[in-house]
Length: 499
Ligand SMILES: Cc1cc2nc3c(=O)[nH]c(=O)nc-3n(C[C@H](O)[C@H](O)[C@H](O)COP(=O)(O)OP(=O)(O)OC[C@H]3O[C@@H](n4cnc5c(N)ncnc54)[C@H](O)[C@@H]3O)c2cc1C
Image 1 (cartoon, rainbow, N blue to C red):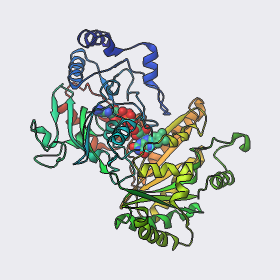
Image 2 (image 1 turned 60 degrees about the vertical axis):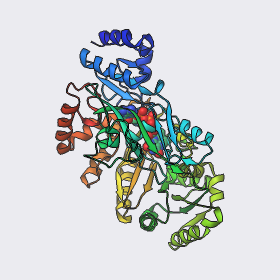
Image 3 (image 1 turned 90 degrees about the vertical axis):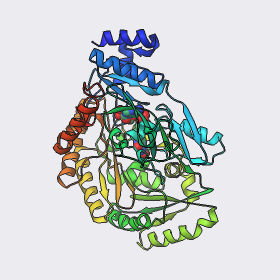
């Protein structure tokens, strides 16, 4: 079936619209997850929304399933590789990578799926830097749209990337084209600025789902503040976490700090710059505490390092706010203040400043080299902003990770009510025993957190179907919606556990 589909796509869209050599299938099937690579049967490269419609209609006709992706930089979550073997990857980003419009007055850009954080940053710089995007700490060549659709997140006040999309243009599984919000009225002048006009908000249906292919949308942008002044605090002990979270919560609930506040474990910090010292541990894992403390000291980190940033008209104007934050954190008796200049000069801490400033950075990708063999998988539950609960979760994570021989590379990205508890789990993917151990470790984390009432969040592709099987109520309604929107189930069956 795939062969006749490829022939049909070629006939309509040309020879270069599709590739299905073994080399291409291997490249697009590879990922970093313990669940293994998943090879597509081929890759299609649309040039426009109309091409996407053509491909979707042919997929219906020939009984082929499609895995749409923008730039495939979902590192540690699946990359380009589909949720199931033999789906045809639709690589939107190769050709559909235009910044269609930038509205500097109302603060938004209309973009195609292939527009990357690096590209949008450069475009805004070339226009005089009046606007700022919210970037991730991940790959600068990731797609702004792809990241948002997967409900990725940043660190500025626009951290909720999906929430910043407006007026989505979507091709459904039938090939039908729809637009969301005010954009539903063709030519609406409010299409990129108002999503809460008439009728149900459909936008959410197209995040972490397989109901449609998004071919264009507006992303809202912030005015770039004249001054961005970061602050940091190191805390010496792992057990300081409960107090840190209690102190960070009011800073966010009361809106003292406009960025999210990061509470970063030493390991998450120094592993961006170091590699695992097997020679000093005699091959043993996980990293002994004494070596962790040594690396932390080398890089100017505490057991926990707290960072955030304030925006204002000038550095001096921000001084009273920084002083207030400083007094509040130092009242713990445990915090050591780290000034903006020290943060800017420290390569590990500079990552945080970049993310608070909408600057894409590839420095955090050093984490992927901490262990040999490049394996990585993200575990992303939410943590209530209650110190005792964060500490309980951390004890649980450390117990499980240590049992399986892995480090506690954890960062709490704190908002007013909940933090994203970023766990990047790093392992040697070329070692079958270690890969299995990571798979078992991941399962243990999911089950332990579930049992305590903290469900898995954004999930790697090799966990999406299992995660949904643990949520029977959601499984039924999402399956019913799938049948309505994509009756032949041509779009990514299995994605986020939706058939
Ligand atoms: C060290 C490190 C740090 C990271 N930091 C962050 C971080 O701070 N924040 C964060 O969010 N992530 C982070 N990541 C994870 C990830 O690398 C980024 O989120 C990255 O931007 C996602 O890849 P992408 O943008 O290319 O999206 P893609 O891989 O293109 O897409 C992501 C998902 O959305 C779906 N999709 C994409 N485009 C479409 C479309 N047009 N229509 C329908 N479905 C679509 C795809 O099926 C895919 O599952 C980090 C990763 C690493 C290794």
